[in-house]
Image (cartoon, rainbow, N blue to C red; front, top):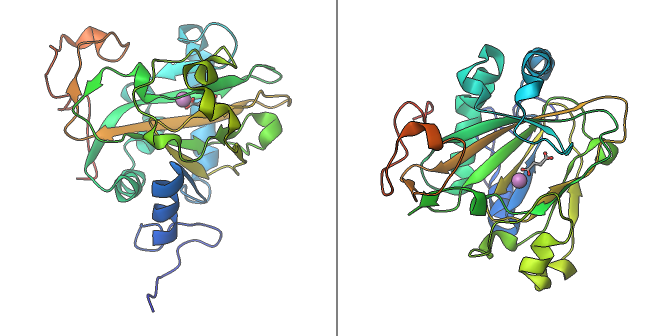
Length: 263
Ligand code: SIN
Ligand code: NI
């Protein structure tokens, strides 16, 4: 029998910083998994305060202009509190445990659904948006900084879709677009995963997902840390993260811009 040392009560993270093998198996099978209590007690509250202050100062810079969410990218390069979370070694090591190979940070995103935004983030896959080549399956940690029940805009996943590579990028404003790209996905079960503040879900770059609208009086604050294969190369495509960097197609995406602080 394998004995494991429990971590904080209510947390899936063990005292050695790893998650149980059942969660790794669930991630590999379904393409997503919930990990409760990735943040230490009190940490979510501090991160929430940092996120709110950053949002108040930078809301106008949101990349998304149609009300689905406020989307602030590469916050870790500009804000000290959320930087701690993006570069968190324990979170990065859990991501590597799930992926099964070395990773680095691709970018982060503060994603805020304002109170009563009433707009879903419609079904899509993430990886088709990214200018990556030569990579194995990337994954994102979607960390809840406040309680996120379904009515505040938690995520819904299409289990098993992590193997649906090769689809065109999908419009996350159009509820039908992923299903137009692959009609068979419409008939899959949909799994909605509410999170308490300090919990997260990990989902792969090809796992189909959406987030419900926020119908509550409180903002939905989520910080998403996106990890890619350590060996990822630039494909040459346009992307807000790589456009200013002057990288050439075929270059490795590595160095200080794409760190792996847990290594
Ligand atoms: C959301 O949080 O609204 C969407 C997140 C995602 O698409 O990864
Ligand atoms: Ni997404």
